[in-house]
Amino acid sequence: MAEKFKNLVEVLERSAQNFGDRLLFGTKSDGGWSWNDYKSFKADVDRFRAALKSLGVGPGDKVAVIADNRVEWAVGCYATYGLRAAYVPMYQAQKPDEWQFILNDCEAKVVLAANQAVYEKLKRIQPDLPQLEHIVNFEGPSDAADSYVALLAKGEGSPVPAEQPQGEEIAGFIYTSGTTGNPKGVILSHSNICSNLNAIHEIFTFECEDRSLSFLPWAHSMGQTCELHGLISMGCSIGINDEIPNLVGNLAEVQPTILYAVPRIFNRIFDGVNKQMTEKPGFIQSLFRSGIQNATRRSNGESLGFGSGIGLSLADKLIFSKIRQKFGGRLKYAISGSAALDKTVAEFVDALGIMVYEGYGLTETSPIATANYPGNRKIGSVGKAIPGVTIKIDAEGAENDDQGEIVIYGPNVMQGYHNRDEENAAVLREDGGFRSGDMGRLDDEGYLYITGRIKEQYKLENGKYVVPAPLEEKLKLSPLVANVMIYGDNKPHNVALVVPDPDALKVWAAENGVEPEAASQSPALKATLQGELEKYSKDFKGFERPRDFIIVTEDFSTENDMLTPTLKLKRRNVMQRYGAQLNALY
Image 1 (tube, rainbow, N blue to C red):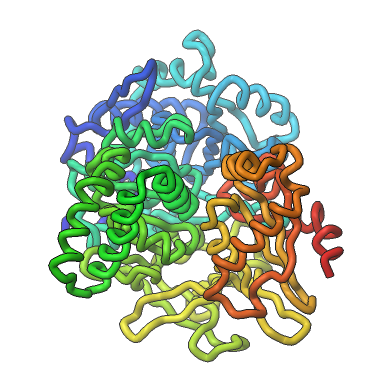
Image 2 (tube, rainbow, N blue to C red):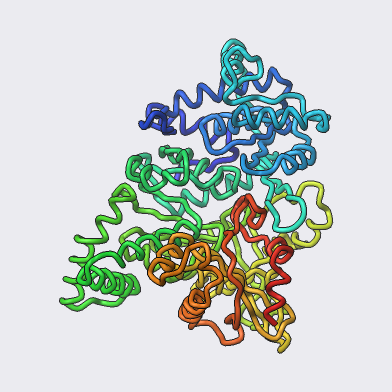
């Protein structure tokens, strides 16, 4: 490995020097893809750094951005680093009052806006933000002084050399979209993020020919550290997805070798492929099922007999290869993070010939703490501690001695939450460890397994502890179930809220002679869903499984405030809306 990175300015400078003519970012417009290269990207960073300097940005200042992934987002990021200022990303989908809270909390001097609509919303709240001096419009007209294009032109005429931040200087704040209360600003230094990059270089052998299709938001630590900074540090290229509905088509066009995704995406692959298979002839269905089983056996180290081997080869040629082709045909790394991936789904995707590497971490750990990687992989685990990181299990107060709270030690641990002394005292131990709030266990080889979230754990009346998320994820594997929430805190047993999959519900209604609008009230649907819940919860203990449930047709979303921008369930909000119906089941 080359000399380790000390700051993020160095990351871009080294890659621009080593990979100047190689493609970097691809964007889709008018049905085609256009690409820039490392050299032209760095030139834009240099120009925009000078422009930010002219706006008064200097060491310690905060530059915020409200935009989905785009080239200008990355330009603003590296330009900010080169002034020894901190970059503070937000989600375009967040509400303006959340933007206002974050801009006020971090005392942003400049904010970069995705488009005219975001720009105008920011203009309306600017009078309440005394520290905010400038709003830059990425899509503003060239004759507007505060447009991105105008500022690039201005920066061209007054170049400013990049400064090299010290490792302990702040690279940025990433605000975690908490399931309750206001978001917390996680302070990450250049050393924090670079420790993750240096570890990635040790355990993954990406080449400059590798490419990703970017759809995980760079406002999230996984998208920012692992994909944006990680791939730039290795000279790779990144196609930027435009709309989620276009994802599969764009995968076929961009032909990525690396897919960074969250479990929700892999669950959709699982659901989608299984649904398609139900429409195929019986021979193909049988070949598909046996192929998945044999591929999983082989992955687990079993030797296949002659017949099984031939069957797997045939399944791969007739079925699996065609599925891979839909994702571009070149995928060699499928990297899952942000939440635990169900083992059944991981084995399924792996069996298709798309090798899955699951990792674990939090925004507070920059984010990677553990990872599966080539030569060190166990499906169902989230891998081993990455180089430089130590994982310990604090079993105090846990129901079982072999599991407890995951405590993380290493140079990846955040500097703290901004303006949150009480929360810092609760999670940052005196010995340097970070209390993750997640429950897990380590096996004899050092592989970590996530067993739940401490704050989500509750106790039934009989004293039994329940961690709802693993069961919820398993139930969502049913083709009929889009979403589910388990409830039972201090109750005699668990109940559930079930959101049927709308497409599957239409098919079910047609097959059962029920009007789609009335399906949710149908006793027949409830009986069918009951069967699905029993089928998919069969591996869980009896007290964990829901005895009754309500059916709700409106899915959880960020729009109805049931999900955070990172798609985590806001249980409190769900209970505020549906708690009376759930309690009526007892």
